[in-house]
Length: 462
Ligand code: C2O
Ligand code: CU
Image 1 (cartoon, rainbow, N blue to C red):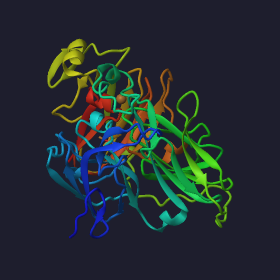
Image 2 (cartoon, rainbow, N blue to C red):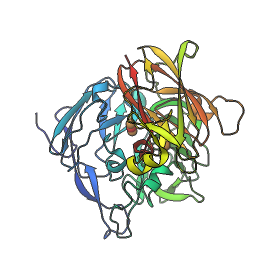
Image 3 (cartoon, protein in one colour):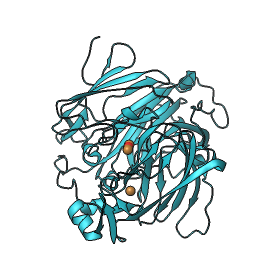
Image 4 (cartoon, rainbow, N blue to C red):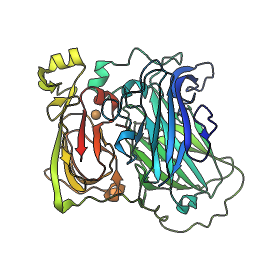
């Protein structure tokens, strides 16, 4: 078999080679200001990897960094040995080393890949890429299919990567390391060609370390058709934009209304004023597509097992710590320490159930086929994006800060099977998963500084 480098497809449909290496990127409009990044195959984001539901895919990773690394396939329900978590499912790939990941993606949809070793540094420096899994003919219902990977970078005025802020405990105990430059697909202003009348699928991925973003397409009606890769019954996207927390994905469908020459803004709406992040650029012509009134058809659902809520075991995760409610004490590597020592000596400022960082024991053990109802109680004054590996889960209820009762989820979340849920400050969210994938699976906050600074645990499915 011929092997090409840099993430291109080699021999057949599903073998890739990805090298992890230093590169330069143009993240700012001014071409003179370049940024030294870490990359997959020389580009940020890394190469698009594309597989088919139910068909094997293999990716050979060559580590050309001076630091060990791994790759985690975020959101894919694959076998545990391929999950890419250093220290839990594999040893990290040393500098100069190689590792072949091979698995069969069970679900079609929008996924992504990133390191699971010093994630807070390696993702901030540019290591992430898209992994799309195609299903059946339903994928052909769009005229265009674009992936939009959003990241916020913290850069110096010169364009250089802001090194000094890596590992800053102030960030770690607050919202995480937030950037000052927003890119879509590694560009200051991404421009995506469309033709008026076309139906366009936009797959948003938030690859930022910590920033919760919201996206919309200015003046266009959009439908939410999938969350975290899994189809949902199509729903109108809120005009204020669709929230995409770190690591989450949202697929939108837009029927483009405009005229040749129009530049339709893709806006990031989480701040006080909308930020133009890119454009749909209308080219000449008019699509022949017949506009059907009402909601578009659903994407075909994947075979994700629904939890059995009536016959479930229960587990709870209580989040504590962080700025303004610092830990008094917590257990770290089996030792009970006061908050000051935890922060100063070990960089730990958050805890799950009174424990900072990974433990020898899992948060819960589940037998294969068992449903677990897991209460995520956020006692901190910061939102957290809680991610579970190897499974997708249903959101059972949410109880906002100060509310006396829990209520069922709303909007597109009603039928969603997510892999990451945003739990707001002082909010309690109950989720349920059917534990059907044996192995040791991580559960952590995907604000990567929070993950590194205490919010990591795991669960066991046997
Ligand atoms: Cu996106 Cu534990 O990972
Ligand atoms: Cu967090």
